[in-house]
Image (cartoon, rainbow, N blue to C red; front, side):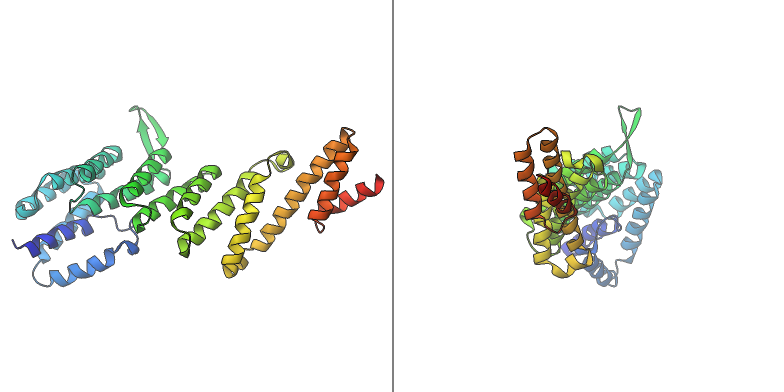
Length: 321
């Protein structure tokens, strides 16, 4: 078999065995598919059919049939057989059986021991699919008995992917964004904020940079608002201040997007909350008989947030002093 055909065979396996729904078009799979179409016209139709059938069997969980199909592939195309292919097939069979932990372990072994393997990209794609499933709430077995949500495992898988390929790559940034979005969806806003911040360090501009900035703003605001409404003024307001800063920057850099999502209204709400927090402090000092400190805070509310609802009450209290 010519070197050209060997490259085609490996490329076909990497493309056809990958999970199409898990890997976005930006990773370049469409272009590779187009190349395959051109090559298949030159006589590779039999191989393409075999690989497509193997993919179908793996995704359908038909283990025995998938094993037989893999053996047939190795027999029909011995030029691609090797230890890296053996690990890839082993991982695929575990995936086929739904044993995701063992599948990931073998994909990792392939990627660690054979980093230059032609099957590396397909292994990473499969790991991304597994990580996405876990972040989506898929359960895993703990100690062979307990079923728990695999969120933590999903985070580990995605972090490992990013470490391998770099956060500056398409797959790396998609893995990082998936982690940030998962944290946010589960209301782990501090963790989500840190992940968005990490992303922003590498992607300061473009769509990713925009989303990271908005994510940081959204998470900081959510941290404060996660508290019961009647207790919020008693918590640290630094999250509100940070959220206001991030939203303000977002409005400056992306005015059209800011208008669409109502950033001005959010900024007004933040000002109201900041004013009310200072008003609450003023009330406390007044209740304890420390009118000097109370008036200082009433003055602050009036001067810093003159249009707020809290300012109206503060003015009334200052008149009574």
